[in-house]
Length: 387
Image 1 (cartoon, rainbow, N blue to C red):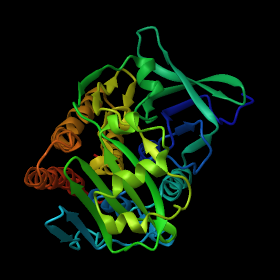
Image 2: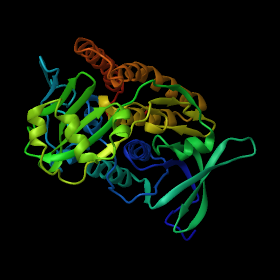
Image 3: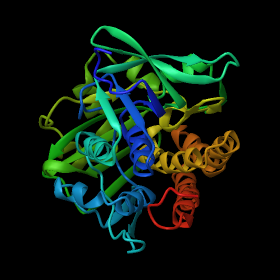
């Protein structure tokens, strides 16, 4: 082949070696399938993310035997979650259950390599610097493989399933013509960076009229501090630069936090300009989408990684059943567990609520999150992807 791909045929080809793709590959490889994962970016490259894990995601990492590696990387254990509404703070302790006694927010430079390396150890072939180009189809129109480009050459690899785990702007989705079935109404723009010396006991979510913010303790003694505003603010006031915009946005939220982030962050500030959430058609003959490729929500509720890990295991279980019907069930199950999350996230992302209204929305969000957690708890034996 003269490219860094070992075989011409695989059970599954996965486009994307981030959270959803690496986790799917890990579970399938552990079950004995021949899996190829390709990603155009170098291993461990950082990406836009507030990287907070919710209970279900921590439970899965524990069941997969990976949580100790997250801890060993210096990711702090977070024992509480605090919701700050200005006139009221509500602190929720993390109750020990199912191997989870804390939450974690590993940097993507930690989490993604942990999942990728575990996939390799399980037997998956993970190739960075290789790009998914397009699907291939058999005489009946079923997807039966993919064109992969690496080192300036294209090769065809055959596969029973091609999985698009390549983000909201998925090439796989484009290649198979996966249409958007449902789109959210609202989105926020977010500016974030990393600062030392902030409290590291737990997540802190802060809400004021028309704005949301958060403090997420992470690796290396740093905390991710973000502020979310209407996208029009970023467009209208974009000229001063991100440091000025961040300072302007965070000051009305919390003056003490504004003072503590007035110094230079560790590394550059980063911005997400906003994208309305969506649900794509995610299954078809020989292909399937997972993670942001199939289901994307506004990041203000910080549930994207947890969604991706949940759906990766849901998909792996469906692929191991080995039928088109099981794959269709993956999509209907994903939609059932995520529909409420998308609706409440859209309402929070409107930034058009009163403080009493956003408190009620967060209560609803908590109830919707429990739906996904109960699904994960129902998978027995723990960590198994067998039917």
